[in-house]
Length: 128
Image (cartoon, rainbow, N blue to C red; front, side, top):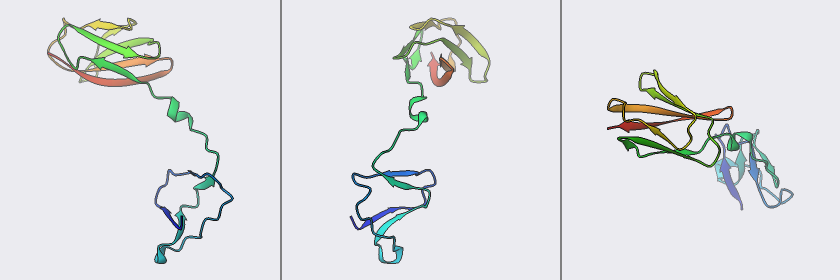
């Protein structure tokens, strides 16, 4: 491969290759030739994923247009669920991990905040 352009990527720290000892031509941008990258990016056969790849919570709130019960699905055990108004006021709090009765809520947009361990994530839903 005679041209690889990966400049102007400030978060690119590693370029994984099959053989790091293989010849990688020196960057010559004016001739569109060589391996052009920021100096912070390393070329390596081995690349370890960062911890941020594992820190996000994956969960589902449904149905998005809810009347009575809001259901929560998650692979990981949920510690608590908070329901906030769009203005940030805490409306409900529960440790029930399967569903929340929202029949008593007024119609409108709400935020569902799920807590798993020390991590949290928020998704929107609409009460009709």
